[in-house]
Length: 119
Length: 117
Image (cartoon, rainbow over all chains, first blue to last red; front, side, top):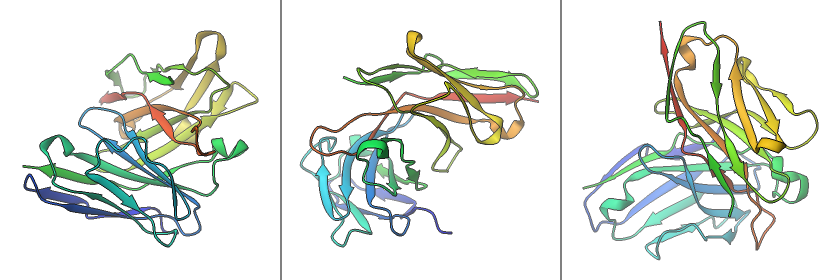
């Protein structure tokens, strides 16, 4: 079965350019997460979707970051006017449940990530 | 605020030797704890998780972890490492969102494991 896929795998952008990163979660998964992983660090939460609803965007570092999941499946993370500090690996994860109650133990399945380098 | 600490940034171990990776968490309620492994160019793969019951948890690839509430620890162990275990390992805890019953993960900084032949 297909896992979580992300595209592109690598993206080089000039400072000031806009980028769009795509995530295809596992079919039928309700929850979708975006994480940012800076070099040599653990992933940090960016935003969370339950189906098409963005329920938490507290981790987005600035208003240049925007995420959507319009039909409750594929998600796109957009970064406007990229800066050098945006260079990182962007990971997408999906899980089957909504996370309520016992769903807190639900496994998140991660994609391979998109490595963004801003020059 | 919830946090996860992995005190060891790098560990070098000989092939066939035992391995223990340390993880300490700070969380007010009963934690949901996870260990993930990340190989170069790969996404994160779940090794094991704990949220209730037996405090010794078995995972994939021969790994196990023990939850110790009194020490706020969830250390990962493997009795005999293989060269293919060279990777980065992350401990994580589920934190409860305020606005929604989601399960976002808070990760430690990771421990990079090098395996000597």
